[in-house]
Length: 70
Image 1 (cartoon, one colour):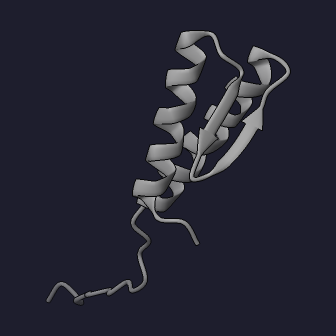
Image 2: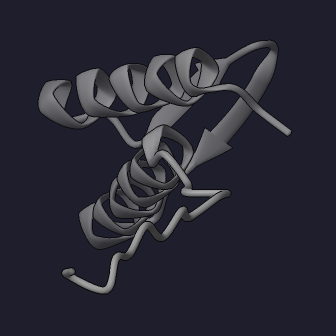
């Protein structure tokens, strides 16, 4: 699985290319060409979703403490 820093690096490269108006992105020796800006926006949204999911802290244990009130 890819870590958060790698996902953020890919997102930054994609955002920079989108702001420059280019549709070809090269990162880690791989080149990806997008046909439309909508495809780039979809990829950015997917990266943002993956980053948010990776940062989410999962609760693995729940403790319940109760009394009778007496």
